[in-house]
Length: 399
Image (cartoon, rainbow, N blue to C red; front, side, top):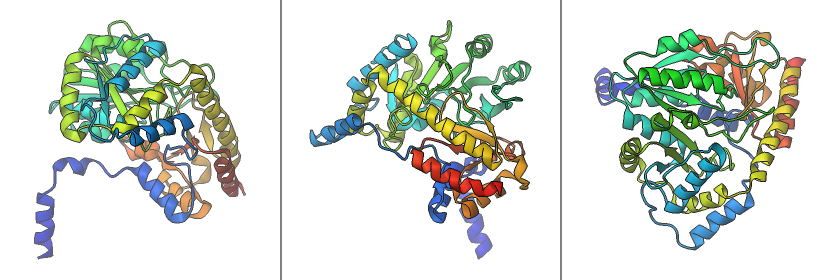
């Protein structure tokens, strides 16, 4: 009877779910809570969001903006998104025809892939990658093809990719490339030359670029964020994904968006409509206030995260980690070879259970777990006192 029940249960499941696991990042948050560990695993701030944004949300609720917004986003928020893209990237956007507001950038990504992919299509993804991209490709019926980002060979170096390897990933089956810049988990910010190389391949092979630019304002050391859609020839073959979560410290609000050419936008809107109907209406109103913050806000944001980065990295180095210094986003990838553990998962378990600090095993960012077996990722989007406590606990490793 047990075997029959098991067989029946498997029969009811989609084959797609056999190809990926639950989120390792979010599992590490659960482990941090279970063991009372400092959570440097999941990328959410433990400090307050800007007061004016919270007040705008409270006012929207009090004003009874509590029913459905237009499915693809409140008009004033779409207008604000278009205005921001023009201000920061010089891109003209038609807010009526090219913007879809979604339940976070995560939903914007899966809605986009479901809207553009057919079975048999291939999606190029750089690895290490944000863990959602592989499952998103599978769920949309496509096959991910991975191109390696290689860690810096010296202090202050950059993560790099091999041009020949990237070119070989493109063929007649390639539908799109997913590009995350600034990058999670590496902190890499793709240069203009690298983006132009990718642009040239997209044009040559008639490929769509899907860019996750959620960390666009979190940049260090004079690094510049360049939107793929701003490059010559890419306006009509780029979907730009962004959202409120990281820039405004509201990861739980789930308000993101996709900006795309009209025909692609129409397809994304269809999927979005039947996937989630719409993002929270009062929080969209608060998004208008957020997107109207002055330029000084963004400079202060980046500087605050630079201070946190430069706070955590020396503590990690002193504890025995080899750190790959990020140029953007708010994560630091590290090499754990010095600790002598068999792999990253065993080390992450030891760290959360015995040392009291949660990180993310590097293998969760790679197709082949072996490629990340000597790496773990830390998030530094935390209060100074949180980072101080993490440093204190990590110091036990160096004894």
